[in-house]
Length: 509
Image (cartoon, rainbow, N blue to C red; front, side, top):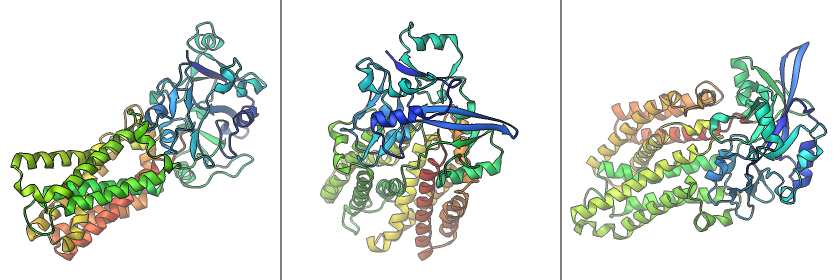
């Protein structure tokens, strides 16, 4: 059984009755929507055509929100409805990033996500969803697509229907008859010309739209839509940054032969694992406090969804933390360990550090709504960024940690290597679009290289954060290298922050 809708846009008159009925039936908060009507216009006066498109959850066959949810709050029911258990939701907002259709919203009062559930409480007693009941033109047609005798199955076989973003591989179960291409595909329209009956939204999404409007004339104009503000901000940037340092301190220290790996020199054995552990604790704190229901953070353990990289990543961080704790507690006795045992300890911790650095790439790969984050090879770039961040932090702390000259020189070499790889990978990003989503990816990456984020990207992210430190490392020494490390960290923060923000800057509905 697969319940879904056919939306006959040839009948839709844009009256918003479906929106009002849905809000009333499901107590949807003001400013949030489970179903809404988007207005688009094509042509120029006096030949202008306005189209209405009803947008909502697509009850996907391969629902990315179900996959990415770390606590199994979302489920695909036997009747095909994608439903959400608010008693389980931790408010991580990952499901909203995973949805290519902007179908979920955050109920700020409850701190949990909500979405269309096909009016399951009505469906279970044989009633149609509220939106279908009130539609005055019967443009909303619910039914079971697995039943060949149902009306929706017959309409699907008799008419040419379209879906939204089939290239995302979600298997949407909302079909459109005579749907306006501009209403279904956000790549074709631009909202910067102004809205009917409402002030246009402000913020990063409008800045991105205004930039695109200057680049080319859009095929259509969005003249009415609902707001979908960015969900993740500085806490996620901070999480990426501190996690890079937590993983990179061990990796860079191991590569440079820094204590405790280089011998009995001061500082005491275990100081670098302790430093990595401190940044790992800060990473965990940022993750927990970004949850809208932080008191439920333990749900990731007690009811974790193993298809989600949020859960897998949680266990990776725990394993890395345990190994670091082992080095802090027992590292002083490592001098008496056999080389084989010591090698196993180094290898296991290094693998855990690499996984801690890079698992976010696979989490972002599950965020099918944010194509910029789905970049191919991102996992390797995150490891490189970790090595860069770790070596820069150790160079800054070298006077306090009292590394010998050889270790300090090795750390500078590790920083140089990290900067060069980071530069190459950053300049190669345009060719790393995820397959079948290239157009959407290039549209987002253009915001970084030429759009509203370009000045920060080029001036601070690359020139100030990579090229200048490279020059200082190659031709400088002593305090100059310390300054180079500081610039590299500033540049890395800026690049990671741009990545988080630009990924959410474009409308996906």
